Length: 389
Image (cartoon, rainbow, N blue to C red; front, side, top):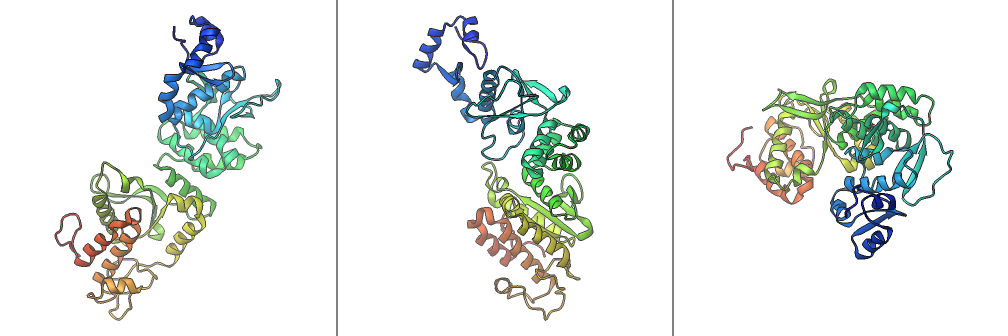
């Protein structure tokens, strides 16, 4: 007979008609897998969960919870993964379980981290047959331990999916007053928003808060609304600046043509810049590992770049290039547009397109030359006909 629970011990196996000898025989023949001492699961189930980090972590967390006597609740990155919320690559490195006290001593078990905390019973949910910290409580626990940025990623995702409410975050953050890390928890409760749609956007916003930069409107419509409109990740309307947190997914999506995606992105940015906005782009790697450079670039763009009086584009050095005698901003751009009078609207338009191609084509740089050639010829790379000015 097959045992009923996902993770079972000898007692559950006996209730399902399996003796201890039958379990040992199943281990030798590969029918069962030992998760922890005295705790097993079906080998087929274990193999199927190999492709799903969340499913595999469910088995490991339940085994750890049973090993310590069904006390405590899954918390921190373990709870975030069980809720289906985004976690950094490599996390959770170990199963994390929190308890209200350690009266029964510490359990030195491999792959298990035990924490102590008080919790309101309403902040514990039951899923996968075990107690788990709610999404709101999980995000603020992460803020206290891992800091503001990774916790904001989890809180934003929880709000966007309806797994948490802003009122919950405020209530829990207030109850944590005086705890270690409560300042970061309060920041998460104050700035969490369901309008940010990716971890890169949430991490970027956390950098803006940390660097005390002016806070932008998130996923704001810049041109129109709905179909045919243009929406940007971050918009600083008073500073006429737009920020884009670029990911590689849209450029490497196997279901889309990267050349078409690149051309559409170029056209989208052109529409934004024609309104006089400066567009600043950064990647997830830049904002997470080089935040100073990214935020400094945004600040410099906000302070120094001014639109040209004729074409409303943003010249690289911020000077008005409406005069015909102005020199090009860089030698490569001058070479690319030597047939156009420097400083004219057409010169600024083509220089702007080359800068866009240089930045947008980075994830698929082997197509950059085709984009630049089409810009020089004044044609649309998708259709082959001449594009308008």
